[in-house]
Length: 137
Image (cartoon, rainbow, N blue to C red; front, side, top):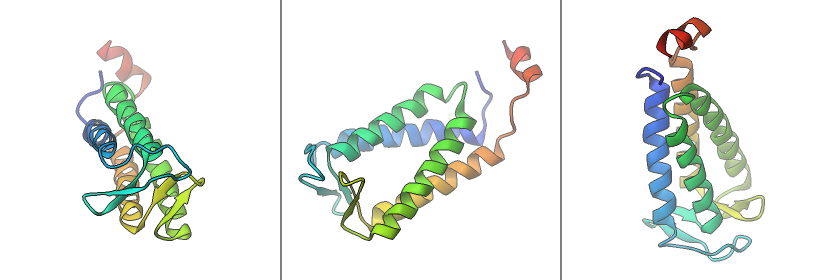
């Protein structure tokens, strides 16, 4: 198991928050359309069932790998969310990524924040060396 680190904290907290947000999102919209029925969680973040599934999957992966691959998760999720944020900003508010994942400006800023925090958590977490890995086994 990885020792406590910024990446492990990120994977655990962001993983839990994304999983919960995805589940809560289904109470707002469970439409699998393109983008189908879109509703705003707390009147702010646009969601549909596809958006909720993405949050549940990415959150569950974070919780699953927090103990052994947190740095990789933080880095790759951070990069993905930075790309998604940029894509959302380019599309504009009220549009949808790939035609079925709705985004608005609040989503874009949230994705940007999660992306930056993920990359920073990965950078702040030292790489485990082979010796470190065998010493903890």
